[in-house]
Length: 156
Image 1 (cartoon, one colour):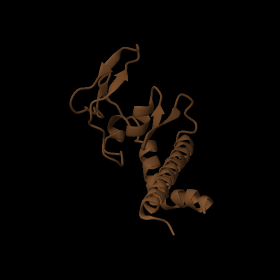
Image 2 (cartoon, rainbow, N blue to C red):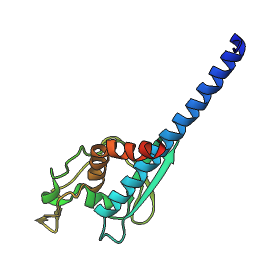
Image 3 (cartoon, rainbow, N blue to C red):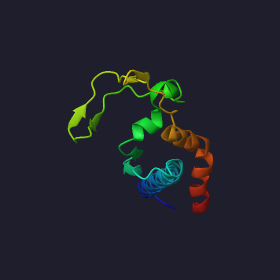
């Protein structure tokens, strides 16, 4: 029979062990979400040679990003055809970006989406929003249960 002090030490050790297992499992689930999201996003951007998908895990959060000179136009659409065609909510937070001449610029305040801009006196028709990254987020949400279980079922 364990004395109270030894019992407390054992309980403390078991709790620490459990916490480490939970943290490890959470990190493995996050890694799996990133892998699945990256694969899905790459499939959505297949055929666009200048678009790359990058991922980053930082602690308990992760980013899956599409990068390329035309990614904003492809994701959000352009011209009169693109206006109102994006499924999600258009971003409005300030961002840092690089112009074509690689000058660092920062947007301040809300973004302006000039879909119906005129070029040479004609209304620019443009193209519909592709929403590839929006679709990736929706796909991850709809497959969350399966992704989590693909990790936890392997552990058991």
